[in-house]
Image 1 (spheres, rainbow, N blue to C red):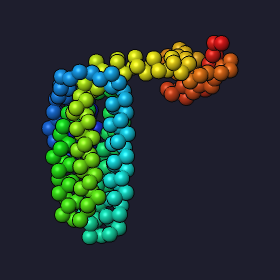
Image 2: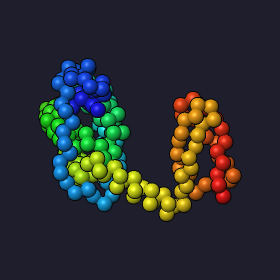
Image 3: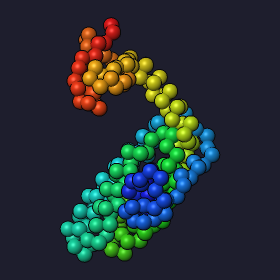
Length: 209
């Protein structure tokens, strides 16, 4: 879970953000909405656009810092873009925090637009408008982030994987006994190399013909 004010990660059960001191809101209920046919696709679209727009924000911020007279806006843009890029990894189907996160960003986006407009950042104003567009996509497809959407997205992903000929193989690490399920895309050969994420042991996994 992330702070709705500064976007930094919150400690489990925290009542206040340890970075900015803001009170932690209870996770808001994702607005009732129909789950789209492809919630994974909606989440991927939003995540991809978030990454692209914030990379452009960082480039713009660097240019603004170099120009000096727009350095304040540049620093603001860089810091906020890095926070939003980190948070983009949490834009996944079935995550109920996504909709509240975007709902609360409207004020920050308006402030960013005003700062860039005052300091001559026309590109920054256009980026704010684009971010508001991304926010609208999230709100219009809120059902993609309903917890029930995670199962729908997984089912669709599994069907697509099966159509491609992917295989799912259960794996048990011989060193630490940790269990995994790995997906092989069109596997070939009698075995594959696998490295246990927990103990880092490397071993061969048999692939059935």
